[in-house]
Length: 490
Ligand code: BES
Ligand code: MN
Ligand code: ZN
Image (cartoon, rainbow, N blue to C red; front, side):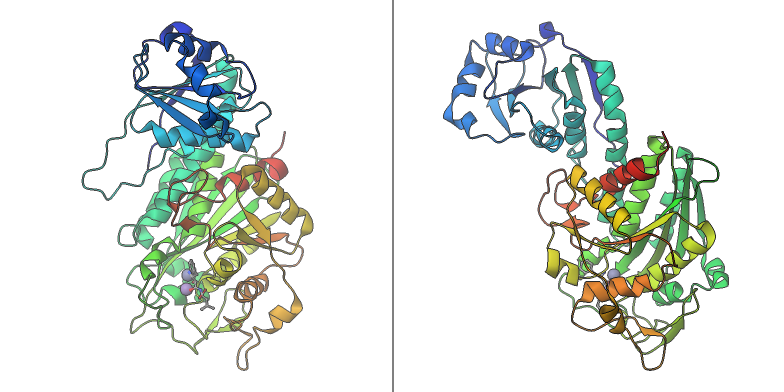
């Protein structure tokens, strides 16, 4: 797994500034006075920092932007990064400041002079979570060098505040690594094995094989994988950090390691992007990792359905009728609408086995959600306003876009089948909503449920606030926050 850049917190020692090799970052309020560290930098630079801060260039900076003064005289450092930090910046802007520093850092050691800044932990989080590169498959990767050192007024408190945030970063890195991995590397079996390794963190992990899935009756899940030479799996990850008898939150993820569309084959152009079709399962894994790392006081169970959707002589055909674990029959009109076939069985199993207090599923489920919401927001579908609003609030706090979409009987009616209980697609209209309606048929009465369609946000072509292009790790922070807001005991 991609390692976090190492980060440490220490008391401010202005005598170390002149000799620090690497980069030095100062946080500057355009309206305010320079803090003690910045004053020392300014003095050693013979006033160049103050001149820059007064310049028109710096006056155009937005909160969180970093601007570089290269090879400053009077300092051993190669650069001074001047971060715009007006009084009253938000946590999100604090993270943006850290992210700006991660982007300029290169492989250098960076010393961040944070003085008494109240967002020091958020700055640290931004610096670490943005410092991600997926170079597993570069034959000559750039070496991962350098560390982050933060000088601040209360280093112990800062380190304590940063620890749970670094747990989120580590979870998000796992999600990104999994979601970025090509399908010949992250096979169904390799995926299951990586999840099983999380036992070392104190998670209970079970890997179910095809025979077990067949005895459980998970035929809709199995039909998706039946055209592939790689075996299907369901992996159950449990974090029991809460009261012994408290019902868990269930997280369910779509883990299609590659989606060709099956017999309803996708067009060739862009098909390589379907290596990210296990993104929902990737987020579930990342959240479970974060919860274990920060020893969350909550019971959470993560279940992922891991399959590969391939065309072959054994593959499921359009027109086939399959019986789900619930017992409802599904007419498979389009084998490319496979995610819902995987999720419906895993969701049913999650409810039958764990009687969860609530259930949230995540899936790169529909191209239609990208048409609707682009890459800014995930689609949020829910049968429960309280749970849904709590999630939307958590996502907003974490800066992860999420937008509620409708559900309703008229959409459900679009799934009617002449020969079976339902079809697996609705038609061209409202494709994301009918997909959600399909899933809702597998939600038991009284279970608060959210479906997150993350097709547009799991992996993107340009960088986002806290991630380079590629897999984002969207959702790890929001779900982690939802757990602490709603499911964690004091
Ligand atoms: N994995 C895709 C959805 C997807 C599309 C994810 C683009 C990420 C980016 C899903 O399995 C799929 O193929 N959905 C179909 C459904 C259709 C056949 C009803 C789609 O969106 O076209
Ligand atoms: Mn598909
Ligand atoms: Zn898919």
